[in-house]
Image (tube, rainbow, N blue to C red; front, side, top):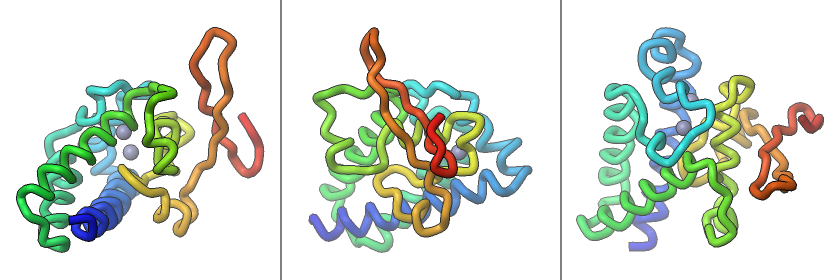
Length: 166
Ligand SMILES: [Zn+2]
Ligand SMILES: [Zn+2]
């Protein structure tokens, strides 16, 4: 089961990276499909699946099909894996940085990482979802960031562009 979940994580990330990047590179796909999801400059939890139905079919249903196909997962593993990925995606869009959240300790691909992608300057970076940042790092689209505590509580995500903090 652990191997099936790991294989599925790699397959899902690979599919989502390239399909997501294509949706930005292709002007027709961005304008008519993916821009719907990017209406959210400040994401919120329900925004995780706020998208055009074609994007839902390509990225999510297509990704799920490939995970099942390549991992050979059982229905039980599928229930666990897809619930887990869904919770992770919701967290990535929640704009919350909660001290009790364990995801930032396990994954470099966090809500802060994906929040940068939703900013107007971030659309050429951080295409990876939902688990790893490997493809972004390998293909030069990784945008690093810092987290600064605010006086009134919470944190601010700041991009580090070309070694320069913003
Ligand atoms: Zn995007
Ligand atoms: Zn998003």
